[in-house]
Length: 280
Image 1: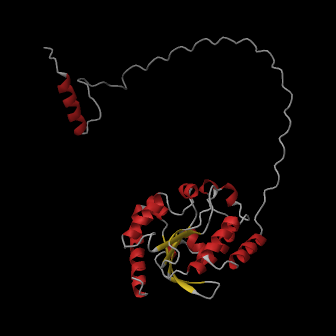
Image 2: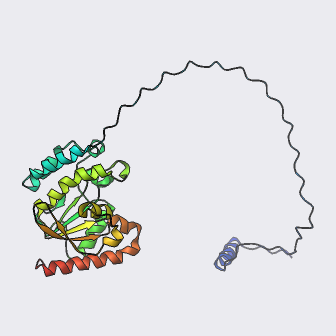
Image 3: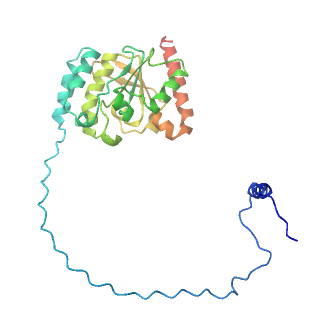
């Protein structure tokens, strides 16, 4: 006898099958697929020979494209020029004006804005990151994108903020095209200004966010995995030294959330150092 099943009952039954993990249907009778006759291949259609196409008229060859001129390469002299210019600056404001007027770094030609710094000059903690991203390039401030928002929350967890306790910059003042890795020449030119930036800002503690920043500022080949969480002393050209802590870049933490535990340990170490120095 045929039985009519309501649509609601069918949907309920199907949901039950899905919940039970059913992923195939089985018929009432078994079928021996090996004993079944092989399917007959459909006959191939008779191909008709297409009429020959007329011989196309070959156009005249296009004029060769003009040769591209030589691409300028930053010379060691530009690094010396940047260093000499930075040393003539006696305040952070003078250094910022010098960086904005400097034309010796190719990165400036493709960037929308010069990204110098954010936060409070003279703060006890200075953070040096790697390079501006798209958001930073658009707004002209460091660490304002998603990674910057994460960094703000991290420092807020130990009672610090860029509006009160932090001074933030990068080793590069201009965004590399497509966020590519900066060349050694580009890093060297910007580092001439960055080292003077640290001297003039005179932080009590320096935090290096990311492997590129740590390698450039500390002038080392060690990777961030070996450097992070280990305090060192950065000797500056004016004879001063500042306690320095390398740590992961917030962008790395967004890609590798499991490393946040190590970064939290670094933040606690920073908080302890500030208390030892009588800052907190």
